[in-house]
Length: 356
Ligand SMILES: [Zn+2]
Ligand SMILES: [Zn+2]
Image 1: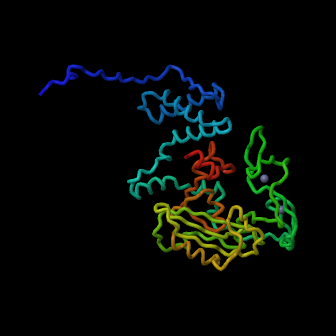
Image 2: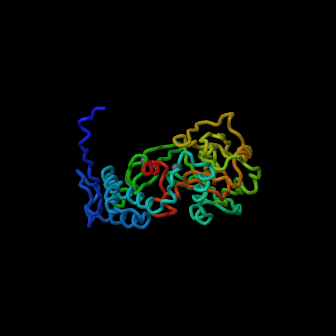
Image 3: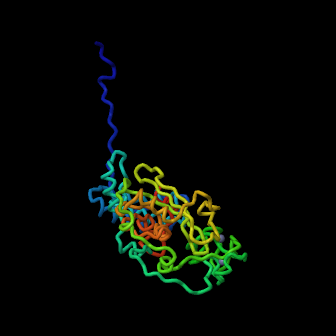
């Protein structure tokens, strides 16, 4: 066997660089910075604190914090920088809430995590869920305030054509303490409206009035047959009728298989004034529409009182279905903007942006 010429050489191994934390934190330079150097430093220091607490074995928390901040800073504008960072810090400080499911995790493991996300009854109440059957109370006034343009109108004349000018979007906090509509960007109280309708619309403002029209029911009383589905994603569509804001459609998806397990159109009690088509996608009542009671029977086939319902801002859907249910995962409560506040919640779109 001949000796290869290279056998006598030892290839020098690259020196393994040992990472050491710097004494002070200094944000990485950016061509255009979404915040002042001071602000960026403060955030990094905050992340260092969180990292030291939740990952005590981490050798270089400062380096990691600088890296985390840099990743966010370079892809943020000054409008999104703080929000995204605060969310990141929240996520870092509560690792248990953000465990991602490994593919091979069995259902029981996933259920354990989902169970830890179920919102407490007190919190549900605080966020506008009804947890008790209310008293029925009717509003005897002959007029209502339009939900869209705030004009007072006579109920008896709701189906006579008029002009209702409004914004179809929601108000959002904008710069300089102003609030803007997310439909057209118009400023609150200043900009002209961007949508118009021939009719005024209203909603029943209290659970007592809702109960007087159509009774609330507790899933413990009506859904007594055991459901094969343990976790169900649910979404309802509503529209304006002469009886307020009513249920028009229920769709449900099995959380584990992602299959649609229910999709029913529901006949409202009142006459339809506005299908809210932009949001509901519904534009007419067809033969497919079933009675409310029938829709509840169908819902009772895919869920029972211990099924976890998962959705975003589910209180509106549950009010529309007149349901009282204790096992709820509401992503609008779970991922609060900065800190939990019942009056300001993220939309699903915002969440997908921040968590994707
Ligand atoms: Zn608008
Ligand atoms: Zn109006």
